[in-house]
Image (cartoon, rainbow over all chains, first blue to last red; front, top):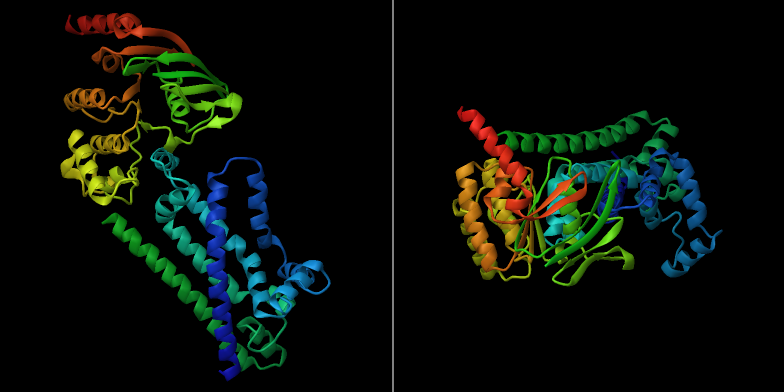
Length: 226
Length: 236
């Protein structure tokens, strides 16, 4: 593998790690709100959080490109604050990745939190637990497999994203060129040997992460049966 | 003193009860589906009535007319239901300590020991809920509910998993402790023998409505007769 590929590999890992950390900070309270909250408007919140899952990545990338670019007041405002436009930058990729992978973090957590016995939630509330303590001391420990699934899915989904990255970030080495873009470039240049290596690296990364998740689940299952 | 006037609908079920409990031990008696658990949840603040008011010692806890709803953890009210609902990832002692965040560590440990001793479960402190029997879990749930020193204790058939002798012994010890600690207690049960075991004030609930309120000997006289006739019939 060439030096350029390693740079793209490191950038992909950095993008996935930053995106996953931000997603957790957003998805945990959002999932708790969806599960514990009351009101019909929560259905709209959940639908909005799931929308990126069904939206074509190129469509999302296009909207973000326009929104974050110099054509809108919002994009110009961001550029004034940061000193550079968000489009075609690593920060812009992070914004796009967070929105694109949001359902992959929220959905497992919603399913995990919803599976916690409502009687336990009532008991904690009766003992004075507010929303933050309820989530940190009851929901998260009891839904830790869902938390792990949310982390792995968000990370892998970001590593493998292509459409949003290409539309929003382009192909700037060291700034926005991720492994998926490298693979595209290699195929476009008929460099199938290098493309094979890149594809194998992406495949290995995904398989390794999934094996780690299932191994952890299996270990917990055995501990539970013992 | 507990005063409440509650109107709540869930599906086709309509609960409408207006009452004042002055006694320190009151039994809500009624068949399954009479609305006992619904009433306790409304008193605990877990559910909100369509209309109504709940006041404890003159302090309003729920008052829909002015949009007042003090959250469950701040009403000085504990609820123990038939299902112990112990936190499965915590030991019995950690379950009891869950509501004691305001205490420092030594005071918390002392309170946990005191509560486990009260319910006869000191030997269960380090066990996890999945290692406890139904009766043991109910004892821990009771200790957990009493630990934060509530003013009002709501018990929803909490002794259903205990055998008769253990239940009677615990009940005697508990009643003595609750009286000393000035905790007003409301027990919901569909078992007439449980209701008759104490010289309590009894609220008879039928179909979500108050059917009678008074001393157990008066309100449960028909139930007592029915139980006696069944006993006589079984001896003949």
